[in-house]
Length: 276
Image 1 (cartoon, one colour):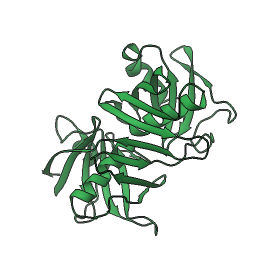
Image 2 (tube, helix red, strand yellow):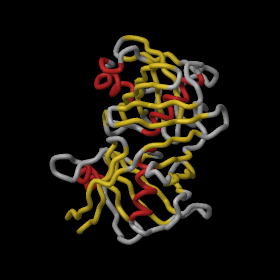
Image 3 (cartoon, helix red, strand yellow):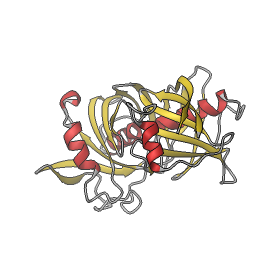
Image 4 (cartoon, rainbow, N blue to C red):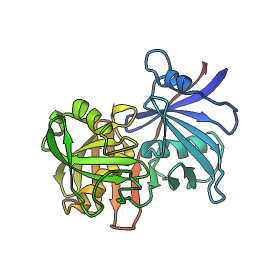
């Protein structure tokens, strides 16, 4: 099977984007893992598939697979690449579209300056919906990791996140502790582990160990989750710039029940074909 693809990235979080509207395919987990493999395949953090919408209010359906071949609910950096892809490939002439994801509808918009803004929906703190085994009433939860107790905030941005505050982002134990948090038994569907250093009330630094992918250069939903955490804990203002190793994202959250807005770049790297 010859498969056409586009390689893209959003602040270093890299993707293989597949057009499932104009080409027909069905990929098995081992084929997804081959595509994502950086030595034997194309290489990426996530594989994004563009499909015809099933929801009556949506323009497209958006499916996301991590590098381990598992399907996940949401990817913020990928959403920005999604709208640029469908616009550049002539699948729509709309600059703002409604996209159906596994976790609900999102609204990405291609800005005049080339940046992309995405309405990511409201954060979820209901432990059953995250899902997380814990107390709904506590914004700060204690988690036992590697023989010690750490403080996290558990929430969902369409996918589960555990955010902790660290004093030195560059020396945070992301590789070791991140993997243990990702697989912690109190997160039945695993979790994205975020490590946030607060610089001031409008600037943070962030590293994220992503579910099924390991540490990535950037995580859009992780940036949203970190800012929401900081605001809920009274440490951040409503507009925050998030510095990741791959670039800067701008996040806005006006408070409970309000959606989170994320703005950042979406870059096409190259296009090609691969024989699976």
